[in-house]
Length: 191
Image (cartoon, rainbow, N blue to C red):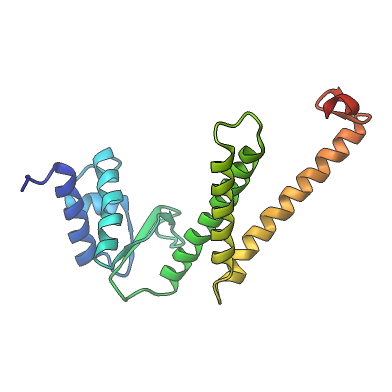
């Protein structure tokens, strides 16, 4: 068995400190740094916290994403919360919903870019990009179909689609205002 690395030791220190001191209050990088004896803002601390988030999952715990605190005493400082297994609350559900929405936006972007590349005649792997676009679309459909959460997840997709449609409309209006040109070329030559 190999000896634990410095990162392993730092990660363990973060987990132990969080388990005994954090739940269920907000904690910042500054709190964690003071608790385990690492410099605030150090790369070593940031790596340990990232690894602790992954390690906490294996034990059924959750180290939430960092967000700006709403506590006036912390004045917008970035904080997180450590939740022990089975002890989540409305804050942890909000965190889960936020990360789900972010994942949906990323999946919409991935689907669009892969769909584009699957239609690109100069693509290195049109069929593979088409498969990825199709699979990503299926994931989006599955996530938005989850009973109870689908409405919230779908709202972000609908808003994003509306923004894209409005951008297309504005681009068409701009082309029309230029006298029927697209990107500085006559419309007949743009095709």
